Length: 136
Image (tube, rainbow, N blue to C red):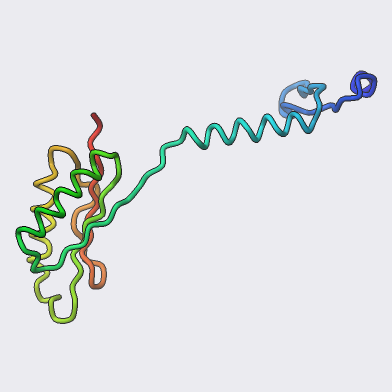
């Protein structure tokens, strides 16, 4: 502590669990600044997962299906996950099988560039399925 006062700096405890505890003589505000900067850098380097949604109806036409399939291919190539879901309105809940067939066909068409993370599950009025991009 005497050395720290002579240099007009702060005594900072680096590793308190070591025997003996490790301390460093530094300017504390500069130390905090470097620590925050390092954490910010690590956060910037971390991978951010983007989830794109694609909505179908139980009676989606072939042209609409192909259009949405192209979008899903683009999303997966960009590295985003795709959440495909069939939304059942009113009495269309009777066509649960159609919705499941549609999602399984969608997964089969995207098999080369994406893998199914979660198989179709009915949650309320939605049947959802997650597809993540394959590693290249």
